[in-house]
Amino acid sequence: MRFLSYLMSGLGLGSVYAIIALGYTMVYGIAKMLNFAHGDIIMIGAYVSFFALTRFGLPVLAAVPAAMAVCTVLGVLIERMAYKPLRQATSLSVLITAIGVSYFLQNAAQILWSSSTKVFPAVISNGALQLGELSISYLTLVTILTCVVVMVCLTLFINHTKTGSAMRACAEDKGAAMLMGINVNRIISLTFAIGSALAAIAAILLCASYPQVFPTLGSMPGIKAFTAAVFGGIGSIPGAFVGGLLLGIIEILSRAYISTQLSDAIVFGVLVVVLLIKPTGILGRKLSEKV
Amino acid sequence: MSDTSKTPILEVKELGIDFGGLTAVNDLNLQIYDREIVGLIGPNGAGKTTVFNLLTKVYKPTRGQILFEGRDTAGQTVVGMNRAGIARTFQNIRLFDKLTVLDNVRTGYHNSVRYSPFTAVLRLPSYYAREREIEGKSRELLKIMELDQYTDVTAGNLPYGAQRRLEIARALATGPKLLLLDEPAAGMNPQETENLMQMIRFIRDHFGIAILLIEHDMQLVMGICERITVLNYGMMLAEGTPEEIRSNPAVIKAYLGE
Image 1 (spheres, one colour):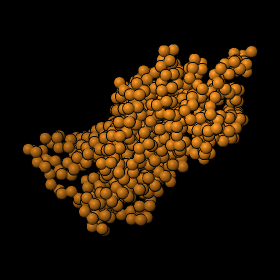
Image 2 (cartoon, chains in turn brown, purple):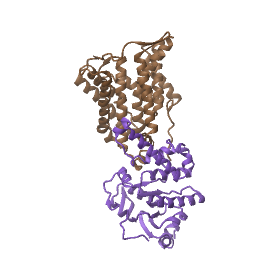
Image 3 (cartoon, one colour):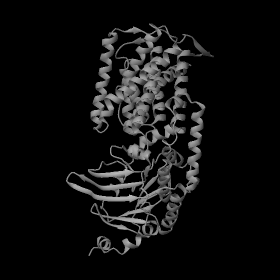
Image 4 (cartoon, chains in turn purple, cyan):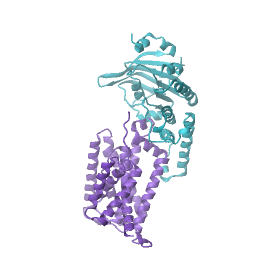
């Protein structure tokens, strides 16, 4: 029974990782870049929802769209200003720029809101659902449910709409997509918009479980979610989902049964092992050379 | 010969491009009229695909002008050219291999049916109506191109000939007025080439568009083109009807050597 409840909290944490990992994997799949500033978008989302809830006294259901809106605009702006001018540059330049954007956001947050930790208000009631001996907190339930809803919506969007087809087309061959009249720049913007909106959702879920807001709050979840994306096969949306959930479960179980201090090391160790055995990640596709 | 009193749909004037010191295409003049099938031939490396890349703005010309429907296209982007009405296929097939046949065609319709991001986000009824409209049109196009039995197959798994037809279908989905076909018969057997010729004629008649094609298969070129332009070393060697080209000594020399 205890194992089951660990498993549930692992799924809860994993759901947050999965939502963040979707941002990494979509941007990688379409823009072929690693957006290391993605974690800091989460941080901005956390601050926006913090102020929305405390200073403006908005209800949670209004704070979520507010944070999503701000993060979406921010994500698109970052792409336009920092990454778009580097479309023709080597991937290393883009990667370093992303790291620069990450530091910029962290320092901007420090200047604007100081480095002191703010306490995030409780947004989801503390209760738990009792299923016999197993108790699952409402927070865990809401988190898992949100992740499932996000996954379903995103999958439907990607697979069953014209814009979704255009996104998959861009992921495969941007040159051919352009010649078919697809505005590749707009598709990339859209990808950043979706990823950043998801980061805002993840921010609120994250702060609901770990109620502290500080300028570097996005770093660790960001790296973990990136790991989850690589773990599942970067570029693959189901991969981000599977990778995120597995990572959350591994983290919680190793925290519970092995060592709290070592849990992060174990998580990253698992990544190393997976990449040794299957370099493209669990659901990653093999890269085929175009002739 | 074509009716010269009309304005051509495409008019290329003294077009040229240099790559570094190498002149790939020079002093090319070309007119294509409405509903005309024109061939662009020449030995390997003559600059034929470069001409397609110039017409679609993948390359920016060093010299000269491209007029489409009488308008100068200088400063147009790749996407802009496609929206203006030029679509193409590729010599080495560039389908979206991981997408289904239906989705490949749907990407082509990306421009022709529009809705605002607002409609898409809110999933307004008009959004679904348009998505259905695209699907209907796509299926119709697949039927025309004899691809309807492959609708849900991943494009990368199609037989070769079907991949070539799908590239044409995807290009047609963008609603072109001028279709550029880059070696549509490459790798096809004589029977498939014969079918392709009929299909190209049918496309011209059914969609009422002009077609410019690059091809090495002389049976196809001579069989369906109304006019032919011959390129050699990036320069125009000859221009005329199939009969004129067939008996042109310069063309024979370029193809056969001395």
